Length: 255
Ligand code: 6PG
Image 1 (cartoon, helix red, strand yellow):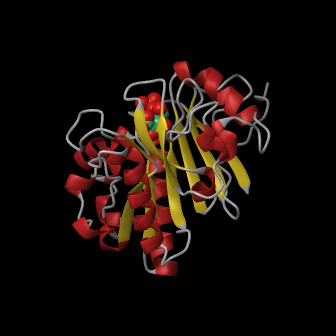
Image 2 (cartoon, protein in one colour):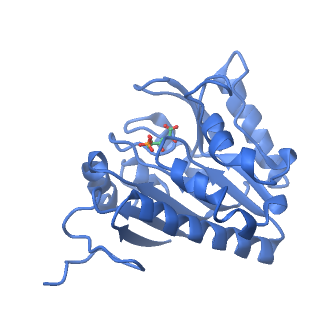
């Protein structure tokens, strides 16, 4: 696994640069494998990125070949304002020619969230032709408490080895959630974390400092044979990260 940290001036620039990279990555996957499995994140950070994918980048993306999944979902009806599916639908999916059959939201209508998790596992394994599916691109966020997808610090889901999807109880609203697990994320080709705003500064610092295998949720996102790219704005970055418009690593700013 390789890691890259890219720091931009503000959240708008993070979204624009990430949108361009998402479009390129989808295009590349479709050219090489005839389709692209894209995993969307929830939360509010990706809204601007989704809006750009639905406008400026809409016609650059081969939507009929894109399959859309979710990295996590709040266990609420799809029209609930807290639904990750609803956010992605309103900002992105309602505006692009992605066939309805290619859109795979996590189910939230089962009386048991665990049954819903198992149903989504079946969806994933079907897409992967009976194996762990390979995700070409996974989008993730980072919570102020360090969670990513719905993998929260201290959660048993962090140590999951066999399940691709599990139901979890979070300490934040809504408590009931579904999430992909570390072994499912391990099958990603590329993972993009989007992190913006000063409230994420400590969480980002901790995530980047966490050693492989550490208990930190972000440290459990380890594509076996892929790359992780952090798209970060200046407010979330600390002083050790130099703002650039292009590739960037953790390094001291030049005098
Ligand atoms: C969720 C998420 C979660 C999110 C972070 C960041 O459903 O809550 O997928 O992991 O990405 O909490 O959320 P914000 O972008 O709203 O800060």
